[in-house]
Image (cartoon, rainbow, N blue to C red; front, top):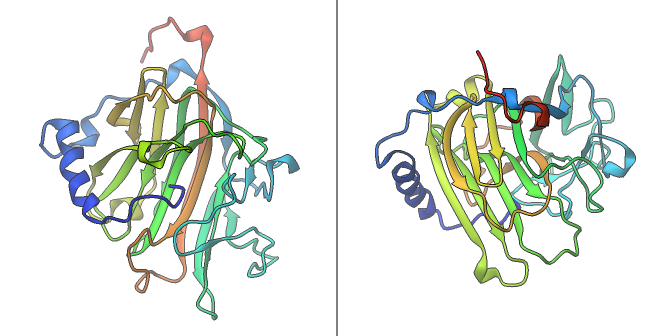
Length: 294
């Protein structure tokens, strides 16, 4: 994410071919047949079931979420706002709504033509908040339909803003509403001193048309010293070697952006990303040598 996804749209076609080849030797992958996640080796260390709304400008305010990226940067064609921003309805906490254990992040076009939306980050520019270097990270979400929507659940190194060491980003699900039959998973390595040394490893998972906006699904990534393994509904869809630059804990981010180079003139107004929960699990030392049992 970060608003820096390359805008060369032929990348989509290239990534389709590359992703399919990497996953299954050129055949269309069947994620439902992937290896099942073995969660019994983990313990939950962070979770939000969205029975209430715990968000502020900074995690130093002792909330679960900050309403900005730690580098305070917007991306896409909608402005990320705080619940108390100028466009917000103080009774509804726009752009975030919680009801019946479901978080709604709403993208909305205002009378002045401005689109607003929301982003949640588990850490802030001071690195306050939650982050975890190795473990399993998961969100259960129902994605918005329509061209122009750009929702994502992703992880980013929890660095101080002035840290110039390379940074790792893991996009667990990055969905472009223009293509309702697939989503991206990406591993980025950002070199903050030489942009020519950026690296991106992107693959695409095919799904039935509109299925991700018609029902809730879980999107997860298991991060170990050796591998980053991606899951859909707790079935493996692909894996990548863990970059050697992965030396920092990872914060969790979930957002509804718009655009990414695609037009938003036909984007539904409003558009809603529904989030049932966001969890993080750490390795359970007591079970490290045990075999998962049915």
